[in-house]
Length: 350
Ligand SMILES: *Cc1c(COP(=O)(O)O)cnc(C)c1O
Image 1 (cartoon, rainbow, N blue to C red):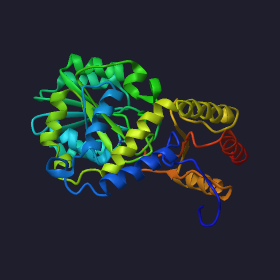
Image 2 (image 1 turned 180 degrees about the horizontal axis):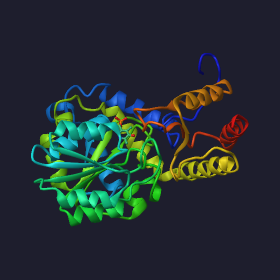
Image 3 (image 1 turned 120 degrees about the horizontal axis):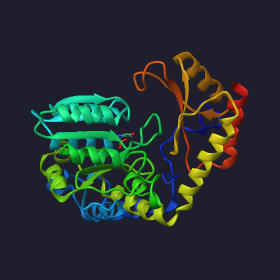
Image 4 (image 1 turned 45 degrees about the vertical axis):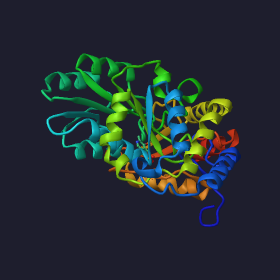
């Protein structure tokens, strides 16, 4: 309900429709009865309880990496991992369209921060070759949050290997959506490398809250010892860890959710193909419709809202100047008819 009007939201990151799943709600309720609500302290003091421990093992197994570490949010995971791994005398190389949390992390690390044009591997290769930094860290969204396109992960791994760098992949929008059983971007490409530091969030497709960093045992142990957003903060409530554990199981068992989501993506793209609207190239749940100027994007968003379709306009500085857009995001919670309502309305409004 928005101001009394029943609306369909096309702007949630609950890509699999798990956020209100009855079994996840039951898991949270039961865990609240067992563990209470608050964790009571940071992980290293007293806050780390059995649900956290079990979940970290399950997450590592789920993404096929040696070890995983829970953080309270994806923002904190990026800040913690980057600042734990690099510092003065080192260099961070980031895609220009990366999420704000990766940029903030690079700045906070005090390493030299270089940005390369979006997905431009030639430019990145050149920057890495010229760098005299002690340690090099490439950071990138695996699925770009405002564009929906996928980073060229195999090429990034090859560059990391050639230039003795680490590669931090932020899979906030790929985890649960891409790959076998929704295991994420690494599974999508079938890549693995000890140079990969993987970050997945648990508040988007997983439908709960929190995040994790996974990778080689030494890398994760470095985060335990040095990631300040892990050490100096209250642990995630154990009931959320239990909820995520149930969510992980449901992602696999209810694989129809991912298939339904992909079908909705196809319906949306086919529905707009013969109109004047152009969606950016994207196979993920994020389907951006670039309008260009801010006023046009806001006006289109308002007209959709009048029809009970909620798609907020995303404007600079969140996206580059001149690329204001409606960031349509789809969810397995949508029906095919709801997506057809959106394409119908956009066809009328072109
Ligand atoms: C949402 C998002 C984050 C932050 O995750 P939270 O758990 O919401 O803090 C980090 N990176 C990307 C690419 C995101 O889209």
